[in-house]
Length: 441
Image 1 (tube, rainbow, N blue to C red):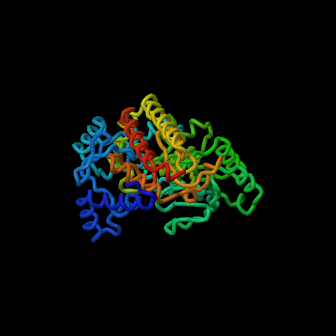
Image 2 (image 1 turned 120 degrees about the vertical axis):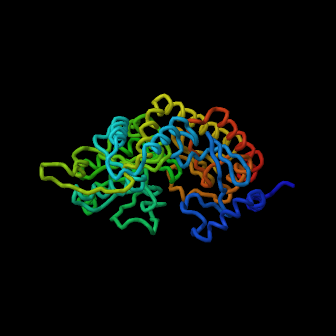
Image 3 (image 1 turned 90 degrees about the vertical axis):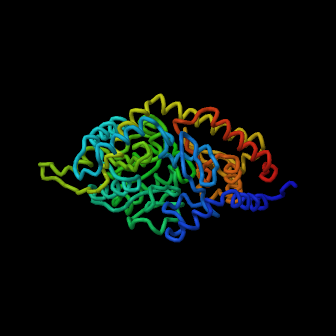
């Protein structure tokens, strides 16, 4: 029988999912007795329950129910090296065998700092445990050194679990209590209007922006927008912070290198420790010297403790990870992603659903959108375009056919992906369109 509506298809897909994953269901129920929602990382929750994984290798994931999936989520960009890179595995083993938790300085943090600074054109940096911490520290030091309070961010941005701005009208209730100004993303006219508002410009400490909004739907900023932020920062003597936690993998030197717009500070994280916990903030020496406890010029000294800032495993794995990730390797992965996104959009056009389903992104990162597309308006806030039922149905379809991605349609390739893996994704996606395109039109 041909299903007539997306809601009918979604209902059946959920029933099939439940019956096919009894072990995952049981694990979720058991975990829920101790963990609210059955998890300790909200982005991994999916209704009616998430898949429980027990093993990973290369680009495959194996579930508690004996299913194997091609991994197109890539640990939300942190799994850039796949699940079993031999060189990173050896580096972690070396770190374990040499002991960990020194409570003192090790040899590897200085070496990793050199590699990070040279790759991204950063003068000085400090390490943290996550991108969230890196952004928190960057904002904090910006306020201290500028003696100002306001922070300009943008609707659709995600800078960490306590720095989330789903839209210009909506902030996470868990956000830290800074004086945020939430502007529309990629809107040059808005930035120009701010120049005239002295109540803002006179007290603007920092501008924090992603050059492509990852969690916000993989929408990329225009070079003109980024340049307007550089000019605003210069005119207001505020600090321009590029959040490259996700985007640093999209071009050698990060997207700031691609666009040729230089920030005052950069935040990093995700993949840079080979999959281990990691974050980094850094920038101009005149800013970062505030963390130099040994300075003798009588200037400002800030304390930045953190038990695991220099944890041996992350430091050692990070050094090896940056050796593996040559410019050629990075370019090859992003070129594969560009082709994949192009072919997905061509499928949508071929099936006549391009106004209801489309793909945005840069390089190896992309997001599938389901909703009402407006011509020339790809930069609306992500929350405005969603057709949740269609988005969910697509996810269940991909899962049923052995392809794992984020429920929200987010895809991140790894250096382990090859053309044949992308072709399998496209094959399964086309199967979805063959079945459901008539409903989208």
